[in-house]
Length: 313
Image (cartoon, rainbow, N blue to C red; front, side):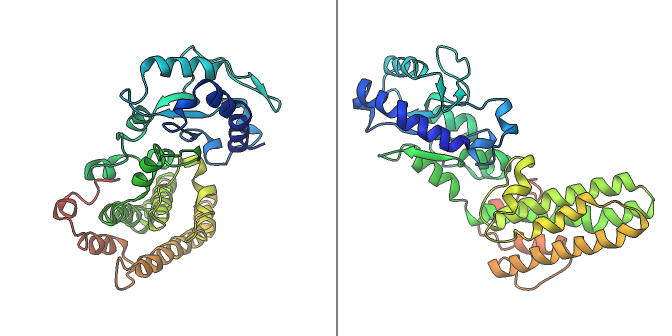
């Protein structure tokens, strides 16, 4: 059973009745779901995932102390911890009296301040540009099972509404990385017969290409071990996964260099096509460094446009 399904069923079987019976006055204040760190929050968990941090559990989000007192928060924590420790063949981890790290009772503002540096999902330009991709992905993954008045949903919606200027700046920075690593440094390393460094250049190219693909889908790339799985699920540029996989899995001997070079050109072409489709550039240019600065020049906010193009990478 997938972790998200387990979480929802555990909540519906035990959590919801507990809240309705013991805390009915909270039903118009709370949100409940599963989000944050962990493969189960992406729906990517499997049998291997169950060797750690896999349990029946969910997150209860509370508003500020002006709406729900600290005493009520503590009482709710205790009630949550008294829920059955076994469900559908899975066992809850041993929790402290105030709840665990991934499941339990949280103040919504505290949870999102810790996760993304915001209590309402409204980020400054600096935050948008410097918070790592995977952190922003974790802030909006998973599912919210119950949120009658939008306590958490509104925060998530704000975090998913990435400003266009921010998308452009982050894309531009990653295009520069792709140009430097794949188009420039990879062949130079090979000329020096430094094939280990050449592969490192390829790895940098692949990471930047993945981030570009997500940004062009107006999303953020998840933690690296889930990046290829998530890439294959994107509405656009999912075909890039096969190209990048060849780059990672092939060597750098004489027979494979030509293949690798072709794959770099293919990836560049796919990214270029999507840049044009999105209207970020008007013409295709195989020099991604030039495309990066062309995109940066279209950023409307003067302050964001004038920041170092590499600020987000």
